[in-house]
Image 1 (cartoon, rainbow over the protein chains, first blue to last red):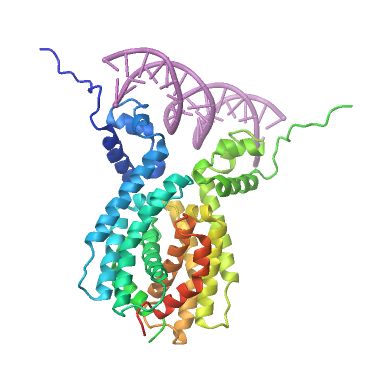
Image 2: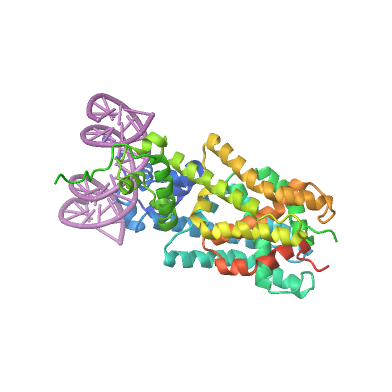
Length: 200
Length: 200
DNA sequence: ACCTGAACACCGTTCAAGT
DNA sequence: ACCTGAACACCGTTCAAGT
């Protein structure tokens, strides 16, 4: 019998997607610092120069990961919306979606918000950030129309809510706050955000 | 005339401190990714193996930078305290100190909160985080005694305030939010935190 | 169009040896 | 005690050449 051709085909098929998938697993399992293009190529079974065909450099691959992270986050936020519920329920649902994504993808969230220094990339990521803020903006704007939220610049009101949620998420992402604790306190957290720390 | 001995002395004097100083400048000017031990050694004028005498590896140097960052942040927070002022003034002062530190040291703040994966280091840094939270904890506890803050677990109340401020700071640190905008909106931000987003 | 293999200029880390 | 110089095993990136 002639042996089966063990060697990989010359073409991979979809190397770009394979690189992203593999990179995200490494990111999750070993962290961003441990991510090497050469190791990725080795794992996939392709030459070390092959990734260069699909990503102009390592940063380009990281950027692609970050952008796909925002995609999934934004979808998750969109599908967490509960249009006809009371304000507090709606904010809590959004906050829980954000926090859940963070707990499931802590390293990815760090990468998504990592400083890039490249104005071109930064602007694309800024758009993505804006998009995820969008869910909060819409919520605030609607609530404001119903008189359920204080008057004032809606962008700024949104920033208060969003930075509170984002702050909680980053503390969980970098291990400063246990995920369980953040989840357990979330309802109360949102309640305090809406009602204030001062007694009424 | 015999030429002046141009070559550096065999001993540097305080290589450890020189490495930290130089590393922090690189961090500020070129970012954490551009930080190389060999380049640091070159800049200081010492062999590439010399840093190994003072830091067991690159991560150890980064950890030292992070810890000294927390030191300065904590000192800055402590000196920003205004004990005999109204609650809102006190919280604003603390928040402003945190935000100012972040604006002046964006890359350092990222490093301070970066995931480390080493339980030993993480626990030392966790202590440092706890310490900076301390300023907020004390403020909340006192205010609570005076009845200026809602009843409830002070740790949790602190977390709400701290994560709101930290969230704002990280957004500024990674360029998602212009520093000027964050500073300009800070008073209002704190006001909303204390009074809530819902109308009273 | 897509990939390889060799080459280049870097890294971090270790370790005998020097002062 | 502190540092050097060489060595080792890695990197990312580029580029002619192969399929």
